[in-house]
Image (cartoon, rainbow, N blue to C red):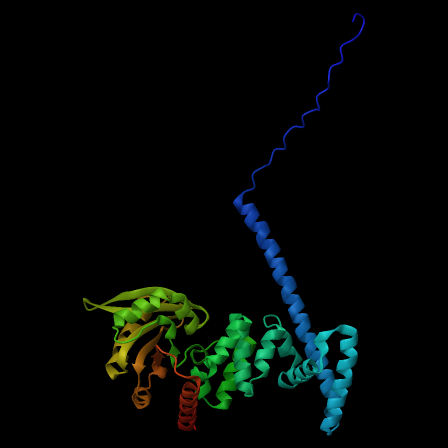
Length: 357
């Protein structure tokens, strides 16, 4: 076939492969942290806005019906308002929801305090707090939730576990309680009365039958995370069986912690039996040694906690241990029925307040 040119098929041009530059782990981690922080800030802003909105609604309704002594008038106003708001804005403004907002404004009348709390507490936190009748107890849980950043689930567990009744704070006069809560609110100032509790519930250790102090110590270290949650926020574990040498003789402190907000070393001794005066002498020796050889310049004096299976209130009072930075508390390895625990704690609070008065 003379004169004809051969036709050659054209191959598609091969695109050069893209070169993927490796991303350093630090760069990815930093960008991820920026995104997570922004998301958290948005969520916090939304929650805070919702809390303040609900307070303003509740306060406005409260002021509207406050001047009228007829209960049925307030009921009718809220019912009518709920119908109109629900029609326009949905299920968040039901009759029950509006009543809860009014209750919120009544129990937290200071808008500035609400604004401060709303930076950490969401509306679900406040719903848990509204069921508490005692204003001091309510303020305690609100402020501790704020500084320790409890989740709603944690707050509920603390209330169910009667944390407030187990603190030394609850056993003081109303004036002392208000003063310490005010310091916590205005200055984030924690005191040992707010930090330490009695009894400590250690049912998570799984100890049954006969066990030794070594078994108790080993169980605490095995369940250290749960133990720190029961102790409270800001505790940091430092040492087990801390050796303390005095006059050439070695002594061993069971557990040593540091509390960040108190800025104090916390020495913990575990006792299987009832508290004995000799236990206090041993703890005072440990605290003196820690104060002299371990305490840093920016720290407060160390404080001791003696955890025992039982204690005599009179022995503890006669030794005046709290003035010497020693706390004595019982521990429970099995959680008793809540009514029994509640009666026991209420009686302890009553006795302590009667003694103070």
